[in-house]
Length: 605
Image 1 (tube, rainbow, N blue to C red):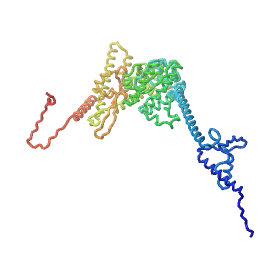
Image 2 (image 1 turned 180 degrees about the vertical axis):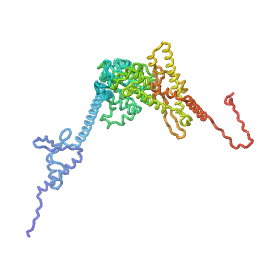
Image 3 (image 1 turned 90 degrees about the vertical axis):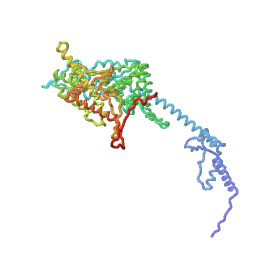
Image 4 (image 1 turned 135 degrees about the vertical axis):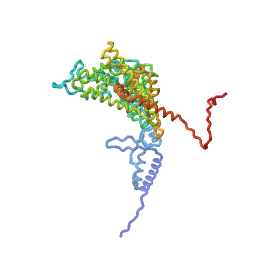
């Protein structure tokens, strides 16, 4: 076996290893003091940047790589120059400066971008609201168009044995609605020609208030007009108002991550106030551009609850309507079936005009019934039939529209009368020998029938007086057929009912003592569409159907006795509630009790 000779390394190699180890320690010490380094690998064909020896000498990098190769370690970083923020190099001072500058520039760019985004978003919100008032599309108008097209007659008159009512005027069978006398004023309002005022349309349900507004909007293609329906829940109304104005209440913004609270936490009233602020800016632009105000229609404001919340939201809109009418930038139109919104707004109104919409007169109602019958493509009827129909249902357009579409108009009118009578009895029917649990309800019902009986009495007196005038030759049969609904002044109605709160429209809370059940009872004849109150504070039956239904009930045998018995029973129950019982104990036979009443004991001398 050949011996292996071990030869000591030469002095030159030993010095090389020591030098590499020293260079590695030197680089490790420098790397611990450096806070950040940027290393770039040179790509093929690219020219490397100049290397600064004071930042990273080549001989140190080469020595570090040799030392790592000799010791068998993995290279800690690739060989090559590093790049700093302000130049090439990786000194400790340069790394801190790079971090600070990067943060500052990032925050500055984010802040500037946020400012630009918010400015764009606010301008986009105003642009979207302006689009809501442009001619063409309006949600309420589009629904009305679809409804009118769906119900338009599609069958033309045919030559057959069945006679049909032929057109007799220039409008023809395609006439959609009867043009009322108030339509001209509504057209002027919607066209923006009535400046400096705001309006409230007041009239019973079904008289054509909304129809007139939609017809006026269709004439101008809803240019400069927006329409919104009220709702008892203000959150729902908030969404409806946003839909009408094309406003999202900042719910579509991307800044929600930086907000501390939800904008909706303030409640619907604050959101509505924000929407009105945006609408005011758009109205200012519109009046400078077009020279006429915008129109905002709030339909069926009686749907708001008649409480503090509902009255406050109504006052909020009225304050805006007053300010906008004074400046001439926007005209508001309120529509209501009940009188309580008018009473609430009347206290603070200075620029409010009231447009009363009533039932058609009997002569106009017969003309309207003939035209509606012609439009429905039904068989031709005699004028006596139309007179009987108008006598039963009156001049209410919604009832005339139903009756004229029936094959037998008189039979359907009598059916409507029977339904109205059943509903009236279900609301204010009298209960003889009622229990104390329903005492308050029967008190309201009995007072209501006192008023309805007075309406029936006045109507019969008017008919009898007109018949006497006909006998004397002072009147004609047409005047007898054109008698209006009986009217009684508001203060006299309160005196007849013996209760002032039953006509106010406020909610009366009833507490059921036996079951401990709380219930809200709306003791308001107007809100139940039993009576109607106009701007002159005159009260009348809500419709001719209500009057005829009350006539049938009052004419029943024993009605007056039933009404008196119910009122006597209410007095007995109230008397029992006011009676106090005294019980004496430990009384033996022969004992006497003496009671003394001293009415002057409370007086001090």
